[in-house]
Length: 385
Image (tube, rainbow, N blue to C red; front, side, top):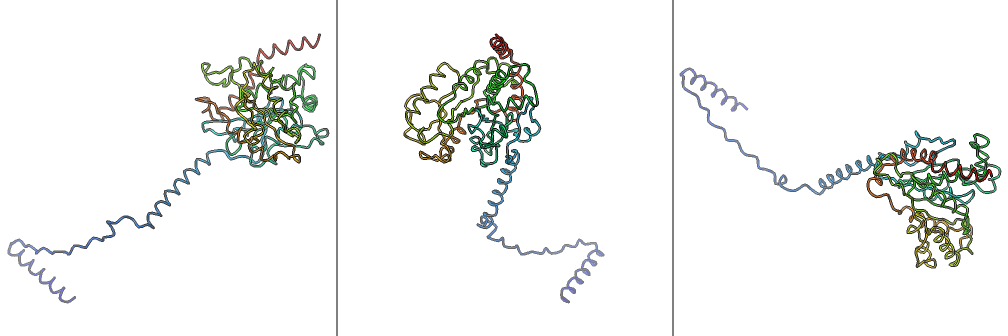
């Protein structure tokens, strides 16, 4: 350390001498040793670093996917009211459950009291016991029907399920008489018209409509009402809020006939063929899409049907499942329905909320249809004479 100080002092003295003499002082350059570059810097990242980077990228992707999923409304734990009488829609609660993302898929169900509509539709969800309210037929006389108006539930697969009150049910009529009005109509005519209104509305807003009956005796009165609703759905557009040149006045959903609560002795080839023939002849001149959606033969080979097969499916009565269990057949039915066709093009890309706004307008158009009103007036005159 002392040697270094002395050298510095000598340099300062030499500098002062040169400055006093006017000569330019040039200090000898100092050569510094160059540090050797580490070989590791030119090598690729270690495996630990690469794994860390990949982990970060995976985390980013997961977070982005999570944000996209969070944008979707979460599935509720039970159904929510969709429509209640007198024609009141639960818009605020409905919109909270609907998505803005492109695409919608709607499944509706109709049938008479006690055929198992709500139970069947609940099996399209992950919580079949608690989605749509159900009850045993023994309590029906005391408590009346469970489903009032229309209930809605959205599955994790974003299928919108619409459960309806029983068609042509005297408990529905009794409820209206207690809390509302029949609008001057006879009771039987009011029930018929409400059934027709419901069927036309569901034909207008659903991708797939399930018609549920108890056993293999399909209700001919219900089939006639469906046929009548097809005719009265005249001049009602599929999406009224779109521009007029995009309207389809002849839109109909895929319709499937579900024979629920079938006994094991009804699972016969003869019963199956007879029902196929009856449905084919009944809808031979219809525009309704009653084919190419369901096939019972896919799970029960003995029911393979070579000819043009109607959308017909058998479900066994619980406790009488000798042919196949209810849950196995129900899983097959659900998969076939959920794989049903979506609307093509722009209409298929309408969001769930856009679908709902169009459904509101369709409900109004159905109730105010001049064509349906003319039919009502003719029927009133015929029944009054």
